[in-house]
Amino acid sequence: MATSSKNRYDLLIEHIFGKNYQRGDVVVPFKREEIVQAAHELGVELPKNLGDVIYSFKYRTSLPESIKKKAPVGKTWVIVSKGRAKYAFEAKAAAKIYPDELLALTKIPDATPGIVTRYSLGDEQALLAKLRYNRLIDIFTSVTCYSLQNHLRTTVPGIGQVETDELYVGIDKKGAHYVFPVQAKGGRDEIGIVQIEQDIALCESKFPQLTCRAIAAQFMAGGVIALFEFEQGKEGVRKVAERHYKLVLLEELSEDELERYRRRPDTA
Image 1 (cartoon, one colour):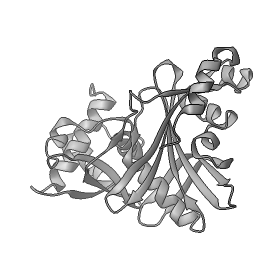
Image 2 (image 1 turned 30 degrees about the horizontal axis):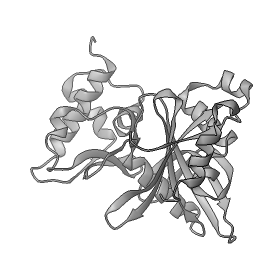
Image 3 (image 1 turned 135 degrees about the vertical axis):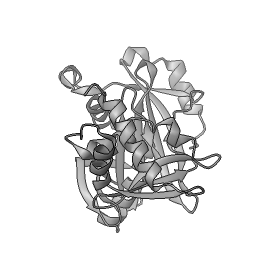
Image 4 (image 1 turned 180 degrees about the vertical axis):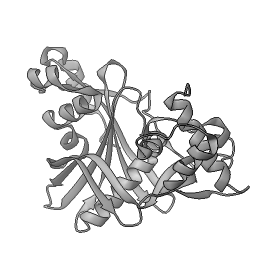
């Protein structure tokens, strides 16, 4: 068939949404098996990896316009997991997180080993390595942090399988313990609210004794790294802090800049 994977995915997800949506819905449940049914009814080739159809629209690709326009005013449709092979389209007030272009920049001497920089595979892995070797999570959170595991994939009750890019644990000056799930995005990938919600749910399920502080990181233009912290409240996930860092050679950091950093107010 001549239909591209992208167009095929659009056709399948539009068909599933159309069969389940009723005017006024803000939650539209569906099951993974409906992908098979949709492919049969549309006469399109069934993707080899059914899960990639869902993953694509959850994390990589925007939903088709025909679905977007049915969202309530001021909200956007996202796909969330509801258990094993169960999902739902949900209308949320904020679906994507973007860096604040006006935020002040902080230069950090680059401690990334040259051999790691040379052989990093892809933007996401390069970003995770820079966070780790430059202790940017520690700097951002003011907590001493340690990488516990990367690409942790596990099952969370009520959601199903979730994966976080890296998991840190930390201890502060009072001796309190924390867990930091980190989502890292490079290139054109975007940070989604659904991913943050799942990270928080993962920590609540697997580390209930620790204080969860959800973190996201994204490469910006010029190699700038944006770091975000989120919390879960009654209104949903909200951003509580954002900082922008640029890793530089030591000689690129002037005394004037250091003096400005010393005078900078300590606010989120």
